[in-house]
Length: 94
Image (cartoon, rainbow, N blue to C red; front, side, top):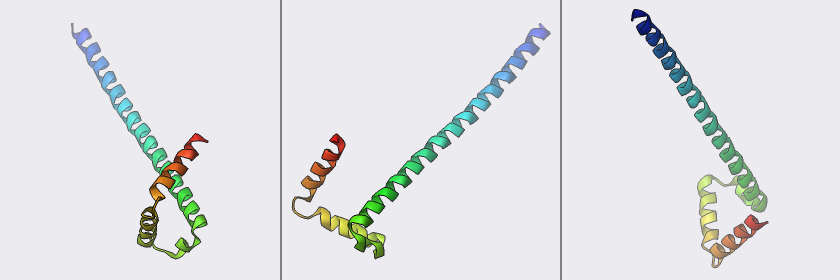
Protein backbone atom coordinates (compact mmCIF):
# COMPACT_ATOMS: atom_id res chain seq x y z
CA UNK A 1 0.00 0.00 0.00
CA UNK A 2 2.85 2.36 0.93
CA UNK A 3 4.55 1.51 -2.37
CA UNK A 4 1.45 2.55 -4.32
CA UNK A 5 1.21 5.86 -2.50
CA UNK A 6 4.89 6.65 -3.16
CA UNK A 7 4.50 5.72 -6.81
CA UNK A 8 1.41 7.89 -7.13
CA UNK A 9 3.18 10.80 -5.40
CA UNK A 10 6.09 10.44 -7.83
CA UNK A 11 3.72 10.37 -10.80
CA UNK A 12 1.95 13.45 -9.44
CA UNK A 13 5.25 15.29 -9.04
CA UNK A 14 6.25 14.33 -12.58
CA UNK A 15 2.90 15.49 -13.96
CA UNK A 16 3.21 18.82 -12.11
CA UNK A 17 6.72 19.26 -13.51
CA UNK A 18 5.44 18.59 -17.04
CA UNK A 19 2.57 21.06 -16.54
CA UNK A 20 5.05 23.71 -15.38
CA UNK A 21 7.27 23.07 -18.40
CA UNK A 22 4.33 23.21 -20.81
CA UNK A 23 3.07 26.46 -19.28
CA UNK A 24 6.53 27.99 -19.70
CA UNK A 25 6.70 26.72 -23.28
CA UNK A 26 3.30 28.33 -23.93
CA UNK A 27 4.56 31.66 -22.53
CA UNK A 28 7.62 31.48 -24.75
CA UNK A 29 5.52 30.79 -27.84
CA UNK A 30 3.07 33.59 -27.01
CA UNK A 31 6.00 35.99 -26.62
CA UNK A 32 7.35 34.90 -30.01
CA UNK A 33 3.96 35.48 -31.61
CA UNK A 34 3.72 38.96 -30.06
CA UNK A 35 7.24 39.78 -31.22
CA UNK A 36 6.44 38.68 -34.78
CA UNK A 37 3.27 40.79 -34.74
CA UNK A 38 5.24 43.82 -33.51
CA UNK A 39 7.90 43.28 -36.16
CA UNK A 40 5.28 43.02 -38.89
CA UNK A 41 3.59 46.21 -37.67
CA UNK A 42 6.89 48.07 -37.49
CA UNK A 43 7.79 46.94 -40.99
CA UNK A 44 4.39 47.97 -42.33
CA UNK A 45 4.62 51.40 -40.67
CA UNK A 46 8.10 51.97 -42.09
CA UNK A 47 6.98 50.99 -45.58
CA UNK A 48 3.90 53.20 -45.42
CA UNK A 49 5.95 56.10 -44.05
CA UNK A 50 8.49 55.68 -46.85
CA UNK A 51 5.70 55.73 -49.43
CA UNK A 52 4.21 58.86 -47.84
CA UNK A 53 7.61 60.58 -47.91
CA UNK A 54 8.16 59.51 -51.52
CA UNK A 55 4.81 60.85 -52.70
CA UNK A 56 4.88 63.97 -50.52
CA UNK A 57 8.52 64.95 -49.91
CA UNK A 58 7.42 68.00 -47.93
CA UNK A 59 6.38 65.75 -45.02
CA UNK A 60 10.04 65.00 -44.30
CA UNK A 61 10.34 68.16 -42.20
CA UNK A 62 6.85 67.94 -40.65
CA UNK A 63 6.06 66.63 -37.20
CA UNK A 64 3.46 63.95 -36.53
CA UNK A 65 0.61 66.36 -35.82
CA UNK A 66 1.25 68.30 -39.04
CA UNK A 67 1.25 65.08 -41.07
CA UNK A 68 -1.96 63.98 -39.36
CA UNK A 69 -3.61 67.33 -40.16
CA UNK A 70 -2.39 67.08 -43.75
CA UNK A 71 -3.83 63.60 -44.21
CA UNK A 72 -7.12 64.58 -42.59
CA UNK A 73 -7.35 67.57 -44.94
CA UNK A 74 -6.67 65.29 -47.92
CA UNK A 75 -9.33 62.85 -46.75
CA UNK A 76 -11.89 65.65 -46.64
CA UNK A 77 -11.41 66.69 -50.25
CA UNK A 78 -14.46 65.98 -52.42
CA UNK A 79 -14.39 62.40 -53.68
CA UNK A 80 -11.32 61.44 -51.63
CA UNK A 81 -13.09 58.66 -49.74
CA UNK A 82 -14.47 57.03 -52.86
CA UNK A 83 -11.16 57.36 -54.68
CA UNK A 84 -9.27 55.82 -51.76
CA UNK A 85 -11.72 52.95 -51.54
CA UNK A 86 -11.61 52.36 -55.29
CA UNK A 87 -7.79 52.53 -55.41
CA UNK A 88 -7.28 50.29 -52.39
CA UNK A 89 -9.84 47.74 -53.59
CA UNK A 90 -8.19 47.68 -57.04
CA UNK A 91 -4.90 46.88 -55.29
CA UNK A 92 -6.50 43.93 -53.52
CA UNK A 93 -7.64 42.41 -56.79
CA UNK A 94 -4.22 42.57 -58.48
